[in-house]
Image (cartoon, rainbow, N blue to C red; front, side, top):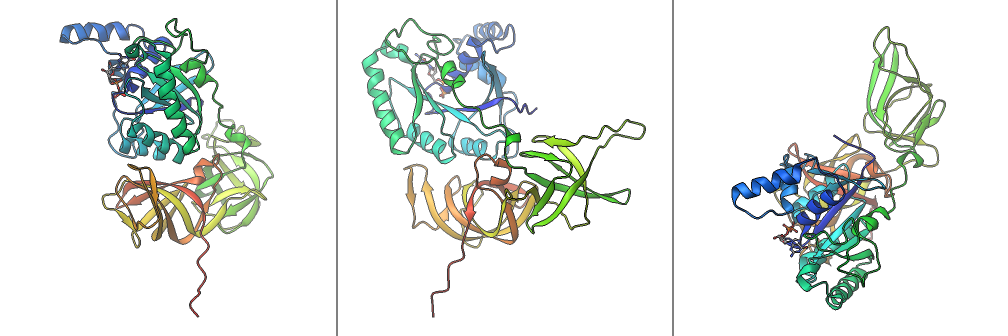
Length: 425
Ligand code: GDP
């Protein structure tokens, strides 16, 4: 079930630093759990002779674990007085990439969990770095397990300073560094008496202060063509409005190609005898069917937009690839690239640089992107690709790589690549 209005967040951090505990407790403290859930889990803990852990809440909710890359990741919801959130779970590095790159609802903000007793680890740094790479810039830090250090402000200050220095080095700023105990529920939904020295927001307040993305209907129009049907001697163009608003009479430009025609009618798919209430306008999120005033060639994969704000088109694309194939990615590898409704045969033409996610450094000499790795490459397509580079235009900015019917990676399109000039003369 996709609930478009939810604010998607991701909870990241070193394993064992308390992500699951924080999620369980957050759900409980915001009254987002079904009635009796915690009692049920406590009772079953007693039966099994184990001590109740808040992380059991998450385990219990994770009935449908994702198996493949295409399957939606586990979704967990909670509500605050301001809005409702969906947590995109990110247990490990590979899953994290999968979820972040291919998840339909990629995170708009993150909570980075750090165990205050153990301090900033390499994995903490790596996750922060990945957040930054993926463009998640709204980050709140939960400085967890404050109970283990007796809510000591000096210890908090020390770890906070180290973390903030690292974040600054990669261009990230934490909106808040909240001293919490996920286990005891300090400073999650309610202010804790154990940290009188802390004047900042709780975790929930920090989340509620994050900016919601610009409403998709206020963006430039993007209508990726899903299909073109012949219908009562008329050709009907079908698709879902991914961004912006489309109005009767609008002049549409179809990319690639640049052919133009006006919206002559909105069609409905109501059966015979059903009153046809034909709209004059549709906005982001709506599936539509339209006819055009001219008999131009339109096909699946093209993107309809308005003059002056059309997507770009190019055969050579610079992309950041998140690679999950079976073999390392290198020059010459052939793949299928899917962007919105378009499908393109592409070949890796160059590997520009590879990001080593373990040392979080960029290697400009590397010539392969390892499995589970991230790199900037040039893809060469047989036919022009319609794309955007603006962050808000997600449907045409992100793509998926397919090999042998399997999704093997995600891409963020960075731009067109100018073919290098022939200098050998
Ligand atoms: P995850 O791997 O990041 O999801 O970590 P978990 O939530 O599974 O927590 C790892 C361990 O730390 C568990 O044994 C938790 O009970 C413990 N833990 C989590 N949060 C706290 C906390 O605030 N205080 C204390 N003392 N222990 C905690």
